[in-house]
Image (cartoon, rainbow, N blue to C red):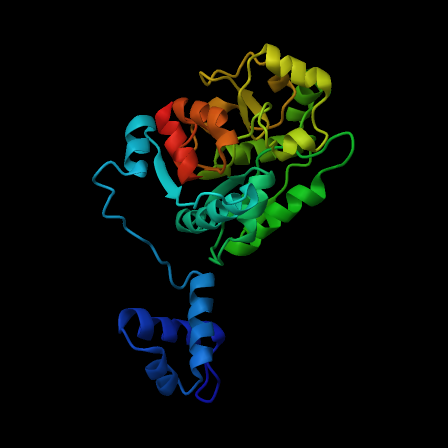
Length: 320
């Protein structure tokens, strides 16, 4: 910056944040020092929070005395981030609150030179809208599973989610242009031998982190894969016969975490769950008690290292 150049908004936000949070200066004092209005200081502090210059965390004194997060860790071995939600809120508001916290948690995990796998779906769509800006270098966002079906290519829906992740972290985006489910397992096997597809699969095999939600074929509040025309009636019958309770990136599993012999998985395009379990950090976002059976199974099987969930869902997990 030259001697006469005006400071950028980011530089101003950094200065205001340092004065306010580190030096305990009042907004009035900061406004005088920076020669701006008090409302400008307020906007600069908001900008600092939104862009990740300031990361506010709350340490609960209850964590050592049976706090939900500690109890969940003791039972499932996963790091839990429990979001307080008042009684009577709508499911949409519950998801919004959990997604906002999830976006902040993810910003702490994503660093330069990482490969981050992202599943598409209703929950991740909301999370992606709340991601704070955190520019990285050499980071790649890779799509976990295909999104096409007989009604749509799914590109627009999945791309919006991926592009928001890419924009938030200044990352390259790698799409996976295949259907969510192939009609024939043999077609998938042949496609998996293609060089274009192998490149994406090899990238998925090197993921440092992955973020997803869990779906359930029998939930009262269905996930996008269950309402977006991806499954036929015969598929639902097959899943019921195989006792599937949930899915991660369209790969289905039972209450005990088993998945290999579930018929529909032979046509699915998401990562096999034993491969997923080798990713160092596996972040699951779940809101609402309709996620209980699928989340409980995923946690019990060790598919999750970090979970962000609402308080009611956390309580139900510990009751069962």
